[in-house]
Each structure stands twice: as structure tokens, then as C-alpha cells.
Amino acid sequence: MDNTTLLQITKDYGSPVYVYDAEKIVSQYKRLTKAFKNVKLLKLNYAVKALSNISVLKLFNSLGAGLDTVSIQEVQLGLKAGFKPDNIIFTPNGVSLEEIENVAKLGVQINIDNLSILEQFGTKHPNIPVCIRINPHVMAGGNTNISVGHIDSKFGISIHQIPLLLRIVENTQMNINGIHMHTGSDILDIDVFLYASEILFETAKNFPNLDFIDFGSGFKVPYKVGDIETNVEELGKKLSKRFNEFCKDYGKELTLAFEPGKFLVSEAGVFLAKVNVVKQTTSTVFAQVDSGFNHLIRPMLYGSQHEIVNISNPKGRERFYSVVGYICETDTFANNRRINEINEGDILCFKNAGAYCFTMASNYNSRYRPSEVLLYKGKSHLIRKRETFDDIVQNQIEIAI
Ligand SMILES: *Cc1c(COP(=O)(O)O)cnc(C)c1O
Image 1 (cartoon, rainbow, N blue to C red):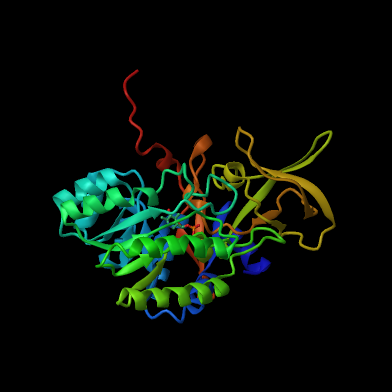
Image 2 (cartoon, rainbow, N blue to C red; image 1 turned 135 degrees about the vertical axis):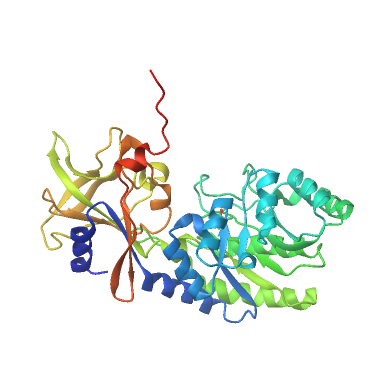
């Protein structure tokens, strides 16, 4: 994704726009597959919520991936993209029994993460195989918004509740075919992950009919210079060995499943926005782009750092800027960042914008959500049109006042 291509995309499709590089998605998928080449049955279920455009889902389908979904709508998107139902896993949190039943009816693997629904579902549908989500209470990373395995987390069934879980399974005679964990989005330390995996193996021994063990995700990618990324090659080596040993003890070749989102699509995406105003105040030079946290909320929501490059003036003298948006609310993308000299009309490129960027966009300030473009086989393809005023008003009902 060179600057010329990206600038041309803003000319062809306008700004702001998200651009995804299919080649990078494919290479990340292959990298993870290769890291686990010693496991006989490996399944990578792409986490739809990271980036849910149907064309991106079709790309994953062509690679042989499965899907990890968290709502029935994501399941429907997957089916529309051509995935077979048995190639989709449904891993919701706090959804209704009815939604889980409706997804199960479609033939999708369901994953239950609380004892109340487990008991109700098992009582009504003892023959439908169910995966259970365990919370091993392992802290991954430091940010409690994205660490979902700790003791106060709302996710999963606590390992301390295994005795009650086993009683429910016995009483309902339901069939547990998989166990699952997802510890969060920041595995910095492989040993922490392996430690959580041991807890999962220990739990797995209680269930004689397993087909798979799902280790969730949490693969970290670098967002800024110096960031640590998950060493998937080392993880692959260590976890594969341990997994194969477990299967031998268990007496059956199980599938090792993962459900990465960020790892597969984050670095493949950029967000392009145009500078409307360069504003000098008494202390700061602001570059204000034609966007805001309505289009890219991660910096304001998580304090995430997205590298920003001025692709219109990549050789310009470096100066310090605060990059902000145009909505009427504080929407800082970057504070006091060193960027090549910015002029009004320049295009800024936000890196790592493939995961949790477009999918978290909103219409706040009644702005349109951006368009999306996929670079695929050397060509740019529009895969989502920019919204129009009709999209803003179509579900509103005017009453007589
Ligand atoms: C969000 C989510 C994922 C993907 O997490 P990443 O950090 O994007 O890899 C995987 N599994 C579940 C259950 C999730 O909710």
C-alpha cells in the first residue's frame, strides 16, 4: 500500500476512507497457520467483530478459515458470505436463550458462557452439542477493559464453578464437545498464556466427548515503534507440543482452535482522512481532519496509539502536531506527535486501522460513516459506499407536531 496508491484512492472514493490490503491479511493467516504446523487439526476462526465487511469475510472463506461470531447478525453475515454453518462458532456474552436457540437451529456451533443459560439450554436441547467458555482467571495485559479473564470479568464460567457445571451436565445429559477460553486482547507474555492453557487442559479432562479446545485469542500486534508483539512462532512451538501431549493422554486427536481478530486484520488496514484546518493556538498546532471519534474511536476509548503519516508530504520537515477531528466533542487522535509538515488539504494515513475501527464507527454528529476499499489482486475495490443522507433518516419516523 504505497502512498501513490493510497492518494489515488482518496481521489477516486473521497475521504475519509478505510483501506484494507488483502495480501497482508493472507500473509498473517498463513503465518499463524505455519506457527502451528505440528498440530494435526488446526482451526482458525476469524473474529468477525474486528472487521465485518462481507468481502473481507469472503476472503477468509477462500483461505479455509472459520468464523467466530458474537451476535446472530454476525452469524447471518457469515452465512451471506458463503460460510457453512458448521464452520462458524457463536461465542456471545449475556445474550438471550432465544438468540442462542435461533443460532443453534442454523447449525452453528454454540458456546455458552454462564451456568444459567447452560442449564436451560441443556434441559431443552440435550442433543445439541455445546462448547463451554471457561474463565481461567488469568490476567492478560494491563488494561482491564481488554483483559477479560480476570476475577471480576463478566466473561466465561469461573474455574471455581466446575463442580456445579459438571452437575448441570450430568443432570441434563447434555453433550459438551468443546471447551474455550478467551483471556483478552493483550498477550505479552507467552508463559502467561501457556499457564492459562494448562488450566484449560485440566478442565478438559472432565469431558470425555470433546472434539476441540479453543484457546481464543489475544494476539498482540505492534501499534507504535517499540511495541512488543506476540511471538506466535514461539507460542506455536510450545503450545503445539503441549497440545499434542494432551491429545495423547486424552486418547483422541482433538482440534486446536483459535479465534484471532486483531492479529489477522489490524495491520492490513489504514484510515485516510483529509486535513481541513491547521490551527495554531498559544501552545499547540492542531491538524483537524475530516473525521473524529465517530469514525475511529480507539484512541479516545482505549488510549490506543495509531501511527499517523502525512502521505501528501512524506519528505516534509518534521514538526509537532496534535491531530484532532471535526466533531463537537474532544476527539484527539494524537497529542504532540512528530509528523512531516502538514498543510491544509493533505491526506493523513492512520496505521493499524483494520481491527475495531470501522466496526466501531457511528453516525455521531449526523456524519456519514466512511467508505471501505479492499486492495485485492493489484486493484482497488470499493467494498462499502459512503453513507448518504438517506441512511441518516431512513429509520426515523416523523410524527405530527
Ligand atoms: C473479540 C474476541 C476475539 C478476538 O480478539 P482479538 O484480540 O481481536 O484477536 C476472540 N474471541 C472472542 C470470544 C472475542 O470476543
